[in-house]
Image (cartoon, rainbow, N blue to C red):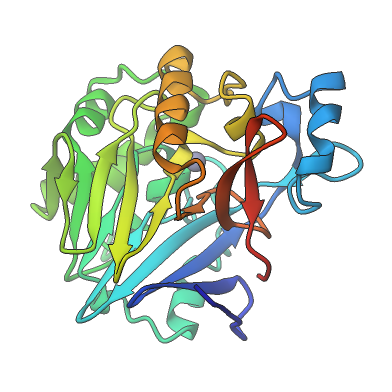
Amino acid sequence: MPVMGAAIEGISLVRVGDLTITKVEEQAPVIPIDLLIPSATGEPLWAERPYLHPDQLGDDDTFSLSISGYLIDGPGWRVLVDTCIGTENQYGDPASPFLNRLVAHGIATDSVDAVICTHAHLDHVGWNTVVHDGQRSPTFGRARYLLSDDEWESSRSGDASSSGNGDRAHITSSVTPIVEAGVADLVSGEHRVNDEIVLVPTPGHSPGHLSVFIESQGHRAVVTGDLVHHPVQFTHTDWYSDPDEDRGQATATRQDFLDRVTDEDVLVIGSHFAGAWHGHVRQIAGSPRFVPLAGR
Ligand SMILES: [Zn+2]
């Protein structure tokens, strides 16, 4: 699975069989790791340092949290996984480069066949919509938008109360208009998108969270969504992320995920991993650890 370089800032690619997966980054804020993962401190974190890539843990215990969407290009189709924060919502940046980077990379918004929302937190749905003539409308005009029915129900009912769902304004601006426009496909259980992509429920971070399993020509990959935010959570599955809505369920989901990928030939793409964003989970020194592929 060769990694190909790309000339546009914020764009990087990897091939999986016949498919090309393109990471389009919106932001990479540098934050203290324990701000996101409270248990990642002190001696237990120090013990993990030899196994972590410098991109994943700096000398000052900070790391870059990548906010990115992932394009998957297959034979005759194009799917986008998640749409970042956008320009407005809480933490939004009016100068968000996400859409400009897509266009600079030659990706017209109406060339996207489907947008997969791994979940409805604000950093995954922001560019779902844009404002036209004062009205919210789908950014990707030809696309079906795929979202778990559980996620939609919990989002609109207001059950979700975590910081991950922020002030909920993003549901009103970036999710509800998609459903009201009739372009949302609310999926349940495991859902096959096409010959190469299956959505698998991975709840805990949010009630209807989905991960994106990919297979082409015998090559396998997965876009994790937020079942992990940082590779250290493959080793310490109980090191929850602060925005995990059900921390016990999130830990169980990480353990189930490890059963599927550890020492398997599955390229793991960490949705929020910066720098070394794809690699494999291998049993090393008695524990599952993330082994990034070189290149960015
Ligand atoms: Zn996220």
